[in-house]
Image (cartoon, rainbow, N blue to C red):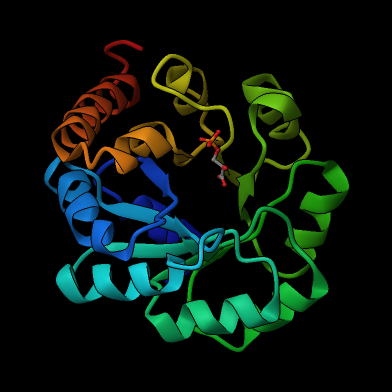
Length: 217
Ligand code: 3PG
């Protein structure tokens, strides 16, 4: 499976970006999101519990798509693959990351926001790219402008996306999914607010479906 197949397989084109501090939160958090209709999660490696959280979620929900995010080195890449990650996301891209990706049969979504970064990703064979940080890199208008010279590229923007601006991104043909931490904020996880996370997932799924079918924002 490549990045394009991964994103087109999602029931909902929204990927929560999750930071787990306590390993015991991993399974109930994933349960709330998956029951709410979300089908893929990006667990960042920004916390020491990230890798174990991926393994715990995969064990509890083998059918779900659990990816690793904030993968910034070959070592991160190898560890995330060993932990059972279904896909790999990086905020940017380096030769070391492209090299690591060649050694694993996992979908890889490298980060790119400039024309030169996009060209480099294309040279390495990637056409589905993370666009981060989306809002401060020009947001939806920037992605729309980049679709001109790069009609074959599809983006997964993250960074500053919420339910308020979700529609401006998902309305673009060049956006196949969006990501963000608004469904699982630090406070929600600290409070173990699984019911709130479930409710946010349900609302987000409904909103995303309405946008993709042209019924609203
Ligand atoms: C990411 O890694 O994709 C971002 O940190 C998510 O950004 P957000 O917290 O602004 O949603």
